[in-house]
Image (cartoon, rainbow, N blue to C red; front, side):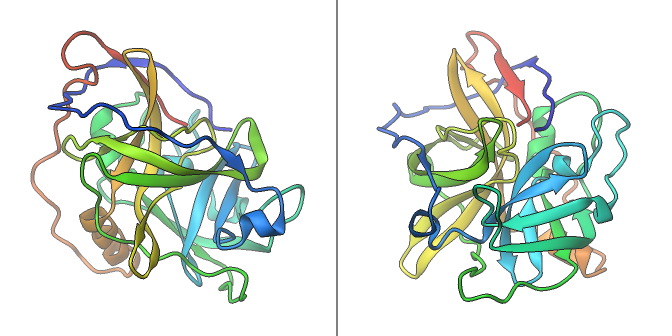
Length: 267
């Protein structure tokens, strides 16, 4: 598990809709339960804990950038210490892979203070030491960003479900402040990097990645990373292509509608 710090922050929620009904977490403990979700796996970070990652190509895993850093030293964890356990459940994985290369978004800076303005770039790609080409593990493609009020879902590991992932089929996009999504999805420590998905006509698509959890007026929410532009920049960085980055940094101001603060903690 990644350790956590609580920081009092504020994030403006403009015209946030009333929350629709969310489905409960369902633990994926059997082969039948996990069918179609084996591309989601646990990322073991040496002796630093674990995060969640998703295979988006035979040799590429998508996760959160902060998972790659040692919270004590601030240094990036050696990729050789990271292991991807695809479809990990009850002591076994559908595939085991080491990591050859780990690349965080070039605009992401890790430091000792959790800040909302880092969520927009909290994205990383891992190149596995060998591709995964198994019929039971199909990479999950990415899709277009959801709108406020849209139904999404999430598959994640966490501190109380480290031995098998859990699926929440229905949660919602509560708001879309600049550079992030505020989600009603149920996440916890270890859920960082988990795929937030939506159903498209041609199947499941990843539309965001879990960056952190927060509390909004006493209610648990999740913060997600938009994928479109950040993922494009990250792919180009991994390919060694120089990319011109946006000049402005997204500004996020209040998570409580101006009536108080929010407890923000990185899963």
